[in-house]
Length: 186
Image (cartoon, rainbow, N blue to C red; front, top):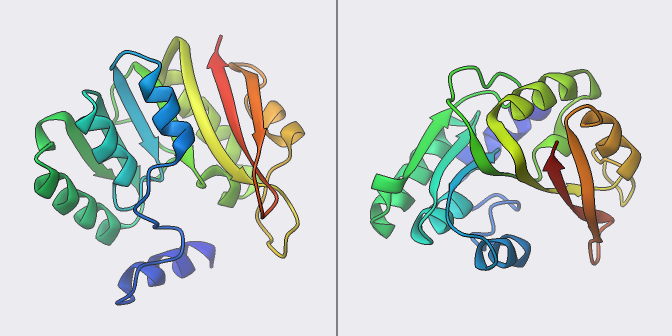
């Protein structure tokens, strides 16, 4: 049902509420303090962050299950003139078998928190395979509450990635209960 709701948003003539077209300052800070490398954006939507990363010299891959969102992402990359440095794939973030790693950075801005708990293990396994040891995973997630059925606690995040990533930083969100997690691949 949740997947149908997200897909329907992409068919509406207006922009869905999660597609702000704005690169989060947390991503900008990371890019400003790290040399370009390879990046993976899980649940990339219309490609805002992938295009930004490519424009900053990164080789970036975006994955999203919504084909219409990926089509918009490709158009966005064409307009920005960065298609040489980015790639978009329609796919399931819990099935990342066709994507070659390793990546220096993985990014998730609001994807994992909407997956059912039963699918988080597959997400974690795929991500662990793709991120190089010492690589960074930046993740934004809603916390439970705030009128939403979706959300992750710090304990949820720690349990999901316990075998492969260590939480190195948590920044509490402003407004709606949420947090930015920085994890490092062991």
